[in-house]
Length: 216
Length: 216
Image (cartoon, each protein chain N blue to C red):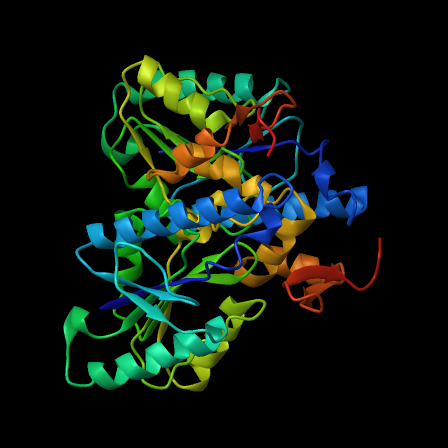
């Protein structure tokens, strides 16, 4: 299976602005990307970064400056043509978002395992955090509520669809409230990155949160 | 396995106050409870409601007016004594929260399946949304960040622990932002209840949300 991880180095996580400087958000986005790449590699697959600009990273990089939906659909079209002559795990394209900081190889195996034409790991807020496409006519649409759009598109083209019920794949890191999940459940380098920034667990107001001792 | 679903009819979901009246919050809490009970029953197990006050519901009700932690620990102690003479699925106590409106029988089977002394489905915000206890010395502690406390307690008493990676079990319904998940992913009666209240999906500001046409 061809696994792509879309990444936009120039637009780092603006909703984390209240707690992280631009430089720190870039660093965090980069460390999360590397955690996702490492998790994919541990499943025995070689990920490709689909980046909006050239990037130095320990993985093949495909540069496509178009918006996410167009760039991913170009990959899907191209891979579906290549897949026609293949079978088994060689077929299909997986699209795994770069901000899934809780991802583990085990969670990804649950995404890769089902034999459906389309497999989706939905995220909070009805997003499509990770996706496998094995149907030649399926196309992505990453605008708001993409999980529902992808269900509809699969239905329109007659593709079978399965969803993966995963807290790890369902948690993308967008907002300050997501950081506590990284500190508690993260298994890669992202928790250490947050700790270097001064974040730690705090429960002074009764709920556990990631709070920062040193402000940016 | 003895399955208990804690429920507090007198304290309905205060963080939903911005979008629901007290009467509506009571109704929603009740419908979510019934969805959880139905999902447990579909796994072939008979749930007991552990309620802070007497309740008319289509399930056995155990009334315990003490705080959640004490009431659950009383059940755990009692069941662990009874379990000593049993084996297999007959052993152990499961504690499933009443506000897991996305619960399905499949998600619950993943909670019940592992053979560990303690099995936890963590929730957003480091809670313990669902739990199985099969160790005589393990006790719960449902204060802030209970997932981490439960890991520590399991470690202290030498209990093996597994976690269940489930978006459905990890999503409890506490805040207005959770309602969109119910409308999209709910499989029981809770989505209909929200629609009766006037909630519908809306993406006018780019993100999909549950918005209400008729205010309380």
